[in-house]
Length: 522
Image (cartoon, rainbow, N blue to C red):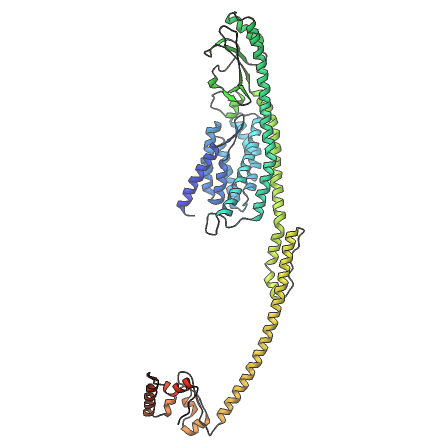
């Protein structure tokens, strides 16, 4: 990947990280499930260490806006650093690398930072540590699945920034863990939402009952002064409710008992559990979790039959209810975290168990060619898994067949070599005998040449008849040596006229023989 491509990819993943945190999933009481670290894990796997750190910085910067404090930034950036270093040192499974980080950070760094810097209580800090750990593991799992899909869909061998292949154990690990987390987390999350809604409905019924009693008290004496109405409200105010107020048509208080933080509905966030129930959060600029704990639930009840009042409002501190829900939620998160760790371990062991026979078969098959060449029967591992056993048996049968074939080929080769050697000896004997016959012929001149016209054989008869010694002509002279040049020229002209082409040199002696198979002339 070139520098320009890496820069553009890093910038794109940084935007995805920010967008993943913007498109968060609100859980409850200022807690959100964010997805920015998916882009960070993709950067670690596809781009490199330092680009992943920059992507983590960009994505975690939005958490300052989302949660009202900067202390999540160093945690998420450190996550990218640790996971990136573990990946560079050979731990290629992003989920396992992320688990190693959160086992330490989730138990020490996150609670210590949130309790020390933000002043959170132990329950809230524990809840955030569990949530961030689960969130990080889930995002690492998503990143691993995305890489698998990208390789499966787009890798043709030419895409250099993608891994070339999918490892079967990684594929099985991601599939098993995904199923485990979906099956385990769905009822836990639904149960947590249901518990929160149930507690808020109870609170709404409680505040509604208090306001209904106050409304009846006011309706029995509609003409009393505002001071007496305040006294009536104070009489109706239970200890656990922080304040009650009677509002006029403009939303201004006519009578009030206790303290209310706001009278305007614009400052209250509506809640889906009850149409009349909302939550007021202090605008302190602190942690969103702490703002929720310092907030107040507010319930509004319309009033009729009073000359000046139109609505009753009651407030109750949100802290006690949040503490109850948080305690139950921490139990659920702890269970989910334990199940996630157990799911990771089981998924890892299952993936290794299912791929181990293939690895053993691969290691054994590497020695298969050598065993086949040695005619040894292949020793391949068996498996209790039927399909793996069938594959091993097929390879074993194929190896045995190849060994037999190689043995037959070796036998045929040895036989052929023996036949060739015998035939070669026969030809050598025949050639030697023929040479001896030719050399022994003294009454006939026998002369042989190569295709270029150079004499290769000049027997004793030729020496006697022509007066040349074989050592002087073999390999050095042509038949033109013992022909008159005028005869050669005359023969050249005859052949040229006969064949309609120019014939000269050595062709004068062999042209007819080559065309007709032989030539006899004096």
